[in-house]
Amino acid sequence: MTVTISPLTPEDKPQWAQLWYAYLDFYQTTLPLDVYSATFDALLSDAPYSPSGLLARLDGRPVGLVHYLFHAHCWKPAGVCYLQDLYVSEQARAQGVGRALIKAVYAAADARGVPDVYWMTQDFNATARKLYDQIGRETPFIKYVRPA
Image: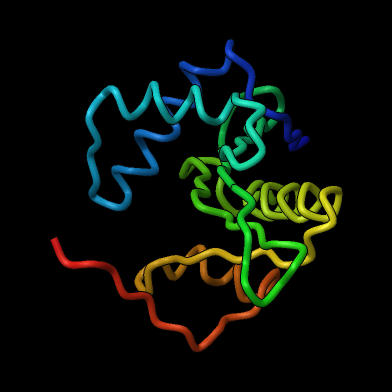
């Protein structure tokens, strides 16, 4: 089986939406429909700090996505790359799709001269963490958010 990674195009919206719905469902999250359109439009934007999106295909069939963005960092003049969303459909897991998506983000960061890439996951995401432990390094940081 061959994994190919490509930037999102306007024609990818239905396949992207199906994968993003599944990703959000995994995290027991729902978003208003207008957020889907706004997010997809942002992923296609050429603005310097808009997120970017890639689609993974396994033998031509869309099976995964990744969203990432670059931002400034007070400690790192080159900035950093945040891998925000990563999803691989259940039937395509353990076939190198997640690894290929992460490596594609690493390549995009390298092309932009940004050596630092980071991401977060929930502690219960044991399957993904097996891959992350191989391709990344866990940090001791704990995330806090503003209360609602």
